[in-house]
Length: 227
Length: 119
Image (tube, rainbow over all chains, first blue to last red; front, side, top):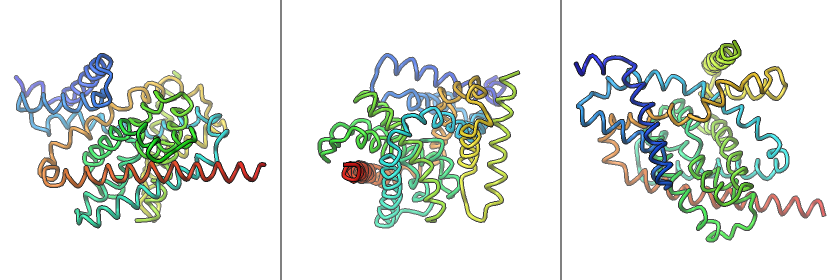
């Protein structure tokens, strides 16, 4: 009976959507960074698989179907960049320099730390794109030969830490410009950090949102030249 | 009808990205090529923004769903995670701090230079 249900790709697809729906409901109630809908959904799916002894391969039948839309979703990011064009125009040069410097510094720091710690090449490549927005990070990880799920893990750690630490880092590093604050949050901690940037001010949030798209694209270009 | 043509554009661009990436002499993420093409098409108004207003906003809104399988896949790498979680944590946090600092200062220095030039 269980196999009849779990062997269909609809099982993994449905479970993923249901888990995200529950995740959204829970995060609306709890309103804490750590309880973001994505994280809740992943934990829920893992819990269902463990409790009902469902092999990962059964889930992956539907999971792979959903994962197939990674490229289309990344393509559509163009629309969200295009919609922000007016804000981009007003501060184009500072945003561009900030995201170029930040993206390059991020990749080089990760590579140097990876070399210093002597971790495997596979893990290093998984971590390289971890500062950028998920669709682009996964795409870069794939092209380098990294492991998607490790990229996502590091990316969530970075995002959640960035979200929590952002106000403190602004004080610690004596950042006075609101544009610099927004660009730094978006470049260093992508969309999870951006939700804190929005709380700090609409202008800071807008800068953070643009910076995360810019840094994603710049990181993709830099990585393809660098490696 | 509009939904169908929007879907066709998205799928065609995704496939074009794959084809172009395969033809490139270096490794580059196919999805970023598709993104570039769509951005150019929007900027040149070959594809109108309204054309991408049925499926795309929905997919952007629920984008996180598409990454859930990648997150769940961690179950296949529990050994690797157990042996290297501390490295992942340290690298994530240190690079976050350095990237934040470098980005913020780069923007502030640029703003200062621009202000000096314009005054």
